[in-house]
Length: 483
Image 1: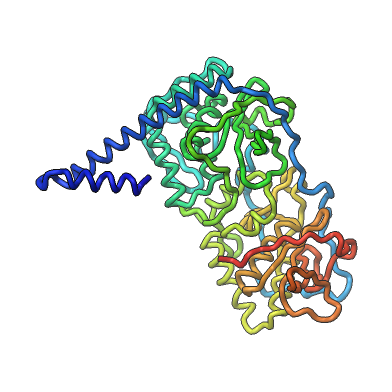
Image 2 (image 1 turned 180 degrees about the vertical axis):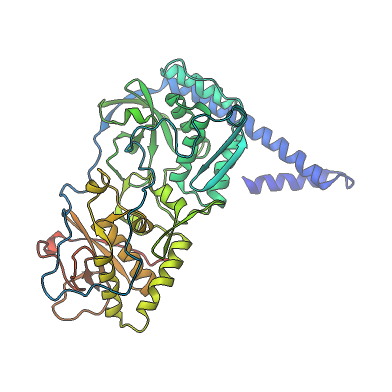
């Protein structure tokens, strides 16, 4: 598209008189093509709005998937034989209890407004400008006029609302989202939350309008999503690349659309087994939401919390608090923030200098076994919430999944060794590619041998597996080398 516009612009310049100002020529070209694109987009949206109401079908709402039916250990077991010594010279690194951030969507106590939003904004700020902060990023943009709202949630009414939205100037919102994605590294999930926040800023507690506006914006941004109808209110249906757990979904032509609500009073997705939505795709190209964190957020306002001497990026903590549960490789392969990586290296590397490979692995293993307080997610949060690396230093407690994800990062980042995760029923551990001594428990994959390391088995040295597990219980999760 950009290449075509450049060619057209070059041809236009060639035809211009030599006395024409270059800047004026480009401005005229840009405005003309922007109007052409806007007109094309408006016609696409209006045609889609008409087709939307005519293609409503009923689908079965599928029950949320559960990652692991077996409960995790209630306490961290202790190794009975010659345990690893607890590190005694790492003052300040043991996580301390502190205030937790907002919890993932729908799991918290009902809130009428998002975080950091005044319930009584000044009329000027509320009516004329978007003025809020999300994931550490300040949003300041002009607010245009938008349709007042829905009279009901019938397909015809929603179709008309979509058509009305297409006549509004959403370019400021769209450009803001694109900029955050390209320059501030908002991933797809962050963009969904940003679109939803814009919708709240426009419609407040009109939740059905929020849903329609959010899905409208996502489609303009190339994100595959639909509006769902059930239980007398609307839902966001998001096509997500990864498998989610604990979230209901509908299957439409072989694609899973996960059901998300914006109204905190109605968090119970499976009450109605039947769900209605339109069985047509948005005419312009759209893609599934990718939950991976390939680059850490860059925010203009980026407060960094401290825990001991390890620093965490609070913008990332805020983003992670909104995540639904996904497969463990998303957590393990996420790119941590620069602040976190650098502080981990500064603090822990001196303790590893001069150690053999096996002693260095044993040190990091003991550091995690003794340095963190154990609690299951149910005990700490009341629901399943695996941690990204940095969250281990923010929340007061962690469990086997969280420790294994952090251990895999530390070993790969500080020692440069290959790591696999071992997914047992109700438990997660790790294994490191290193020289194995006789008697060590190991796992093999693709001709490589990995020594089992369990950060939850207190005092257990490398090469030790919890006695209740057998080789048949192991499911290996390969992790790539860190970038």
